[in-house]
Image (cartoon, rainbow over all chains, first blue to last red; front, top):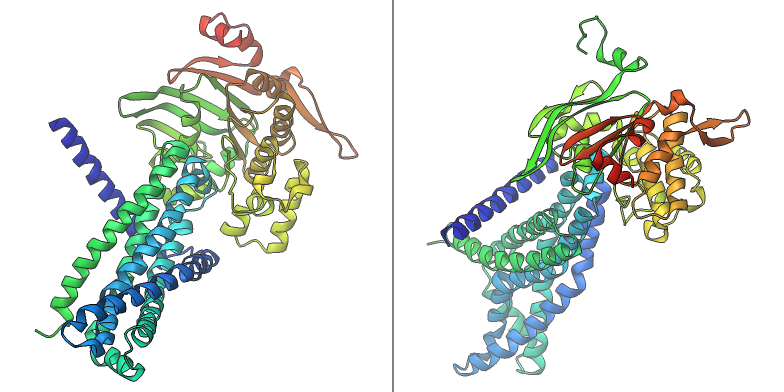
Length: 259
Length: 282
């Protein structure tokens, strides 16, 4: 029993160490040559543009559901007209970044883990190294950059679409005047909220992609191993998104909000 | 560059006939409790072929991976083209790999790239060679292995034998002086395997590439050892039975549990009295 715990702890420590090494190597790869620019452009397209539909749909329906639910609760206090405040605050500070992050885990994280995992088990990673290419620079750096910069862009789009969805429900189901809705959307927003909504997705995008790359590059055990790596990337990525969201929220509350 | 005892630089030594291009000196490697290489020592001479035979798990592929630096030995010394690779970092190994080509089991072609992009990968990505020149070299190499018409296909559209040959083309495109073949013919039918063997022979004899061939396919091992390539005046290439002198340039190594149990030419290997080798040959 103790031996199993000991072995599990060592394994966990090794995973963390390898993850840190990979992240450090990726960081170095961003600032030193060679830079594979066409791979970076390709990943921005695949991760950014490719995830647009799923993020748009998620944002829209989340905003609509949020407005609908909030309307019911606000009615108890006769505060239906301020539904816009709840929708915008929730979308921008919390739901936009987290849901866009979770969608990226599902779409991008799983894809990266499966792709890199397949490359590992078919010796393509070794072939890259034998051909003189550093797999971290060629495969990890472009994905990390794309995840880091595209997650905020996708989150902003998700926020706007969510608020728009909220307006659709507010206007046609809750019968709140459009002017009232839009003014309450902006009135309740502080600059700190916007910062929180902008900083979070940078962190989440970075975490999602680095975890997926780490899991993918550590794949072993043939095609079955690729399946396991894909599942692990989604599970670990999802938990990491929720956990990181909490910690970033705490840090930002203590740092950027007036006390 | 450092001078040797006789005043020559490593580059000058390597340029001479009979120069050692790969040297393994008492190399050992274990994965946890499993010892893969116990005490492996051998030397590959320039322009020669070393054929490493052995059962699955005997450490054949591991030896190749140590040469390229994909694995690090626990002990021992490994020299490749005058550089001691067992002490180099991943970054420093990149320079050594510019003169080393490796053909992996199943080819390990990049799925998302075309045959052209696979073959020219190193030249496109890792050199400053002009694109037109790279394209010319890719076409030349694919012509050499007889797959010029497949240049724009994806690897998934090729047969197993074609994939292995494209892998050879990819490894030879940047003109390395040493090629390492890891089970290049395993899983192929005899006719297709012979086409791959012919490529190895042509590269060795016409391009003067030193090679280490890891396999457990005896038929292919003996075929490569006992044949040579010649080129007619009109440029036609023939693969013909090797002269005795040429045969001696192909040396067999038999591995068992990470140890060399035989080293010698094809005839000596065939006539070995060792029980294990006899069983292997049967």
